[in-house]
Length: 319
Image 1 (cartoon, rainbow, N blue to C red):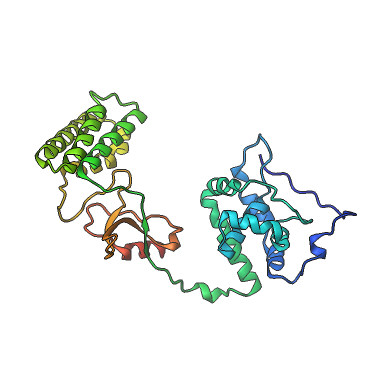
Image 2 (cartoon, helix red, strand yellow):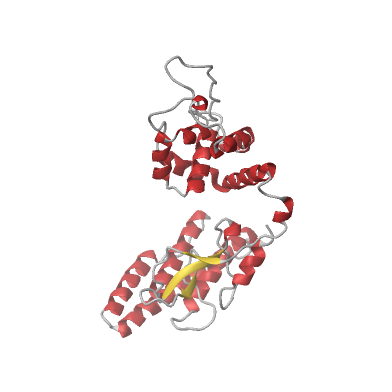
């Protein structure tokens, strides 16, 4: 439910108003008066339901997020500083000094998840205020300097047995989600084979390791052919299974030291193995991104041999 608008009080006999004890020429006071809080509140109104407990005031949370990024603070840091900084309290819409933080720190995390793509409102509000105050001129926006970088991914070491096992589990999840009845899922067989392949490789029994790997690949091939037979002639299912089946086929056919296009993760095909030149970490599993895309990962082109930062920049130039 949308938060209730705070009631403005004329005065309190035992408390002094914040605007009477702070410097009204302070940068946070000036910024708080120039931001259109009502516009932000209208933009995030669709994120609320019609029923339930009233939510936290949008100015309070949006203000905390702006202060967090402006001063480079963590969630805990901005909450702690809010308690003893009257300018922080005035910026977030309070009229009287508060001696305790009125909400939980975890509310910031919940709000970030709720906002999602609406976090761009913070950037829009900042640019609007900068343009109104003259800090940002129109001609300054004619040229934008961007760069590309890599984003570390939480991907474990991509052994062949682990990748094939992940492909089998991924195809089974997708089949269950679309109500597809498979002849056999091979989940238990694949789990046992992947576990034994890791043990044999650790014990340097590579002939037994390759035997388990052949077992996994054959079961993955059976699963791919079974799904293709079941979805034949159904355009919706064929479209839903096109990319997962393509990734599964790539994982089944690729070798450990092959050159060219290679998948390192079934659920994150954009991941690349990038050499870092470090003694502690000679290579890392990352994905190309650029700050202009708000941290969004740039997907690879199919069968692309090496990552291409030029395409990442060209995509960000279209924003």
